[in-house]
Length: 272
Image (cartoon, rainbow, N blue to C red; front, side, top):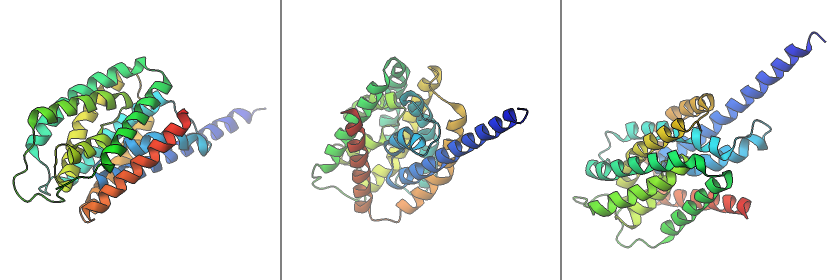
């Protein structure tokens, strides 16, 4: 009938609209939490983007597509968080320089070679990183400081080496690596909590540059969904960062531990 093409187009437009609204909500929630606890958002957004769209009846995304658009989202959510922290005094520039340059190189390599991995392989990488992050969060941290009570020093070679490894592995996911970077900075490098949260956003931003470049070069980025997540990130991340500066640092740590644990359990249940 003559009206059929119009009805089909109308239905397709409705599905697209629902899909983009779903993406915006996911991006907003993930970016808000990422700004609040100093992560790029991938630890939350990866499973949300993978599971929620088909759950609510809109277009499903593959692991490669999720990692591709997630890389763009992390890039802009961390940028928004860094801008919110720029006058806070918590950004440790030498730490950002050493770890940021190494993680940028690692993430570019990891993201470029990720297109050789099957879907399940990407999920396995996510599950392994989540387990490591949970373990690090549960290790007792003797002498950890919420605030800096003097000059903060760190082992430059160790920081750069750890950052390169994190970037190489997290680049596979299109992630900035902050969900494992934060516990490493707290547990191994002994950086104060608030300085870790702020500086990790800047380091993850540099990591996301490499991850995004690798994903774009290998054709893993869906640009319209990525733009939706980008818009949500620029709105939500600064809000989360400002709220995070007013919340007790211990609560922020527990929030991060709970989020990582929940996503680790979910991904491994699906893999088994």
